[in-house]
Length: 110
Image (cartoon, rainbow, N blue to C red; front, top):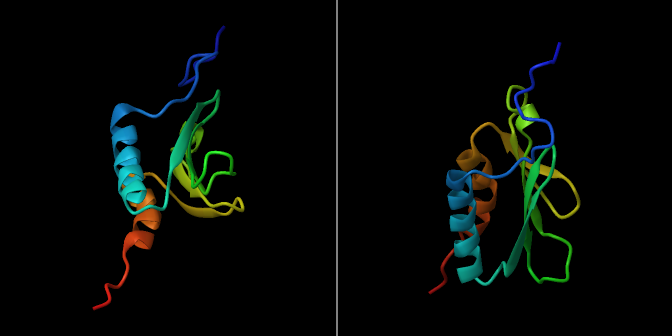
């Protein structure tokens, strides 16, 4: 008797087109602000990672991760900082990405 799993054995987790649209929209705004320069996407067995870099040869500034197995618990999306700290976690990607949006808002001097 085979057990039913929500993900086929041997499959990889990936970001859906709508998820990538949200992430790449944020990425484009941060590139335009001169803060981010490069990204990498990893699709692994248990999770997917969108890594953001200031320079290509550096460690990622942020990692946006999707862990489908956590979708019924604390949420499948998380933003992780440079030192590995979880900055935000939740069920709604748009809400989770807001932790990175807030850093774009700055006071304009005269």
